[in-house]
Length: 161
Image (cartoon, rainbow, N blue to C red; front, side):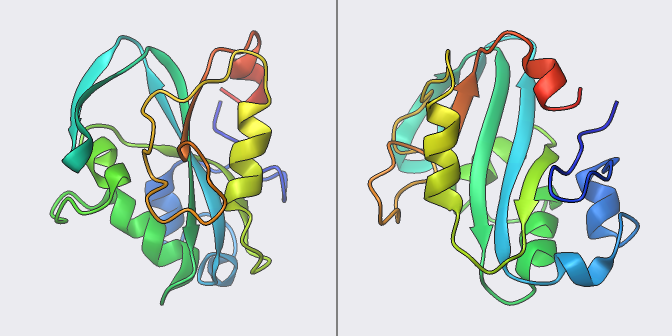
């Protein structure tokens, strides 16, 4: 089953379909917003993450919370996450170079919701920060990371897998 956009209730088959313009109203995606990417690891993954160095991610569900307030909005940012020829600049680039994410949640209201969503995720039982500082170098609200590991019973139901 594909992840479901909680805001619209629509099933999004994949990030690549969204970026190609086949998933819903493309104008919805060409605006600034906040998004969550979902990754599933069947086993631990060792990953070099820029200056953070060699780290190990636990098996299970990982949610990355990001924002897209630059030119092209959500569509441009999500397209970058799919590119294989990108320079590895942001922490998330190192993860998307290894794994293809699905989109789990998005908001195009123009509000900066990144930190609020991280707090919501970290409040879930079993949630943890797998790599301190991942994705939060420029965080203004002191988030420990913008990547959250979830070991929540029934998580597969929550994320629509």
